[in-house]
Length: 65
Image (cartoon, rainbow, N blue to C red; front, side):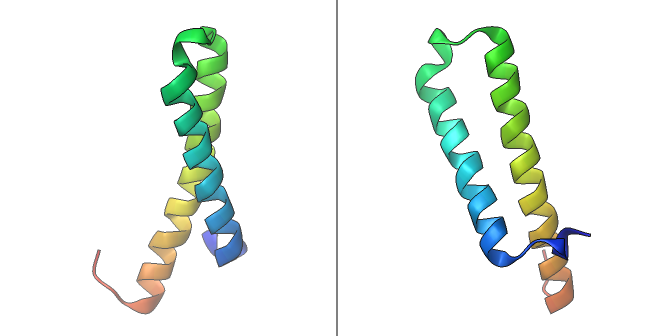
């Protein structure tokens, strides 16, 4: 399932999650609770896709986790 994305897409999603989390770490005091929740959910969705892709890639290569 996760291999429906490419390595480049996984890289882009990981970078987007990193940017969201960096923004949260710097601006959380100025954000409304609903904005924080949206940002956290976006980062979670992006990173879970990348984690699934990496897990499948590891399994396909037969590497230990």
